[in-house]
Image (cartoon, rainbow, N blue to C red):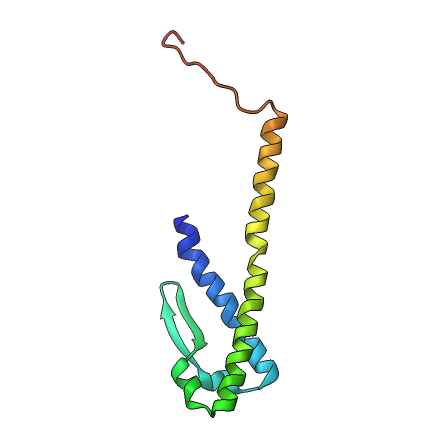
Length: 113
């Protein structure tokens, strides 16, 4: 669980930012570079939307970029569902495999063995 927390959060964040970047660049080329900032994290550097730079844009453009980012962020989270779905299939496979071998059986341990 620590690995999921330590690695999962940044990976999901990176997926979201890449999705946001590509969506903004597709609809308004060149704008992402002006409204994003570069920062660092434990695993390296990354680029993300900067709320201060976003609010410095004209209101209509800022709202448009925010709307594009929100849609892209939600779309990238829909892609993340693949990982828990894969884990679910693996656990179901393990349950079926253990049941096919007879399931759980209590074993008595004695001092004589």
